[in-house]
Image 1 (cartoon, rainbow, N blue to C red):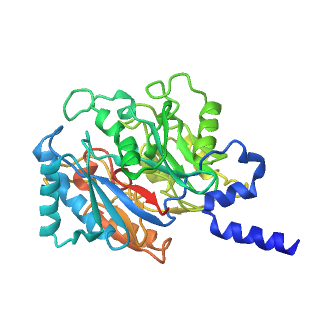
Image 2: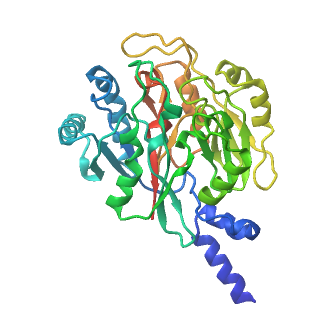
Length: 380
């Protein structure tokens, strides 16, 4: 008996957090095929799709380069940075930018894949673990946020190149690919995972006729249980048509750890166009054990965001859309007085990581921040 207990303890200490959760909840294990590790678990690297000019022009590309340089500079200290370049010409240009910024490329890898845009969180690979703890790549459907018309061009958003990215990475890495394109359309920014069996999402960006026509909440939950290893769900209604994503959760609520959700005050959430009914649901959320969460609040920016070119966007910026790497936490910053306030609050959550502000003003004009353009690859 003692040997059996010691053996179980050994297994529990070597499993990732989501696999530990499976052992502790055997009644659900038969419906779980794969489990997605939390973002805060150790990474092998981070994926970035570098901006290019082939869809939106040179001005678009050059307005974003500095943000990608800053992210790369911070990430290389603790993990690999996997840069996706549109072609060899773009790879050469990116290398020149990195060299000019004195960024050594020994911890940087390049893949030459055509992309339509930069939002790798939404179209990129979702790494999960199978029952043997092997990493696999899940390729969820991506249709450019419901075939939205892009205000920048006035034309339907192109997405075929981006939709192919997970399968290309899986082939290059020799990793098993779980093809979910015909199962569910789901962007990575639509869901928040705590790695302990809980998923948080807005229905508007998943149970929407422009993504998954006719799909019920129960059907979606069964899919998420099977492929992400979650059995507890925090559903907000969200608002279809609010912006291009139909209100992704990662703009205003994030699992800081298994007991804490980082969000904003109710006043700021309302200012960020979150409905009062959703605010009530968020603050009433419970984890898989049935315990209430602790909530930590960061402000919105004090002022409306103004790009580096002087364009006033007419709305404030969120600090919730940050990214957790091995030794850094990259927080969206806006050259605003509240940057320092938000950075300091987030730093309290990660004593073993350094919070670094990344200027996202130009990226924010196009609808996203740091979390939207990063995708983690967990350690094997």
